[in-house]
Length: 167
Image: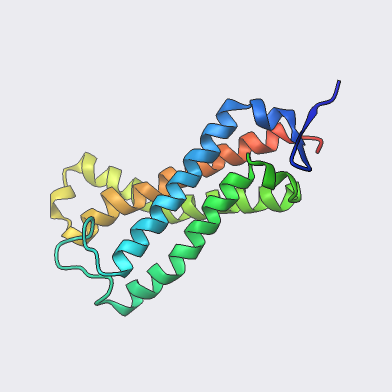
């Protein structure tokens, strides 16, 4: 009995098709990344919803450049997440997919964990009300979003790693 199935000229380990958690976390990661890309596009074209009052990405060159760089990176992260569970990913080498997925997870977590921990300490100490609007946005909005992305990507990478062991 074969452990592979054919999909339009490609084959993929059956475990990828039947591992519900891996699929869920990969799709959740893709949704997270594509949503982040959409938010960055919205901010880059002048939107302000979700930003601290008075902050405009278009009026701040460094933030605008960050948005312009972030959009393709977020789209690439979403495509990478989909490659873990979609047939097109079976045509790609396992090791680079794993390096990319684990790297994305680590990048998101390294970026967010210090701020998330600091935010938790501020909440516990009762000092959260001393934060400026941009600090509140960062500590309680932006950084937790990065943290969620890092966790989702790590879970997707772990599931893919287990599902493709021996490939």
